[in-house]
Length: 234
Image 1 (cartoon, helix red, strand yellow):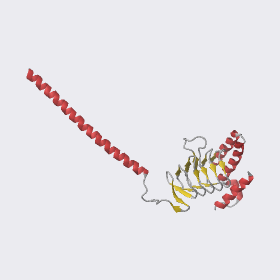
Image 2: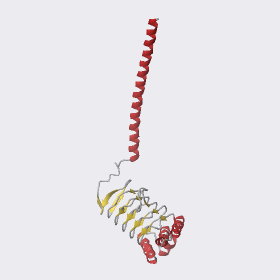
Image 3: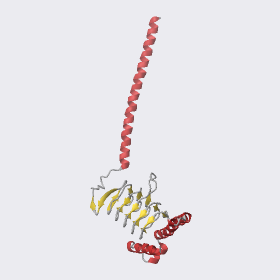
């Protein structure tokens, strides 16, 4: 455990230009505190003392704003930068030297059983606000952009962006032409669909009104003819 904690501190010193000393990281970095608490909680979890494990993890959650389930499997050198709002689910697996920014969720979709959460390879970076949901793998060296929602596997050394996320680069080579200017706006598309639906409904209502008016005129004509026939008989 102490070796792992040293590796966690070393990884932060290497990757965070704001880190001035190992003592500062140890005492003040919420991401390191959360990982440190996870290491302890995971030991109790693996030794079937799950209540104590959850107590440690929940205490760390209240102190740091980072929730790591003690059943998750996390390799060496995890760097949770800033960290507030990070959630890591029970069956999540994280490789070595990964970087996770604030408001990231490594969660499930609610449809799976058993293995429900993602597996991250080594040297993976997950940008702030990204959601990785489901029991699939994010490959070694992959990058997930800020705000992306990943619902499917990401290959090694790939970059995934968007909602839902799609792979735009593998090994630094573009896999598609990503047009940031003329990209479809889902809100605009939905408003356009609703406008078309509204126009169709108006046309149907007008047609029904015309049919109703015609039926009323025919009924009135029938009643008038009926009265004329009655007067003629008299």
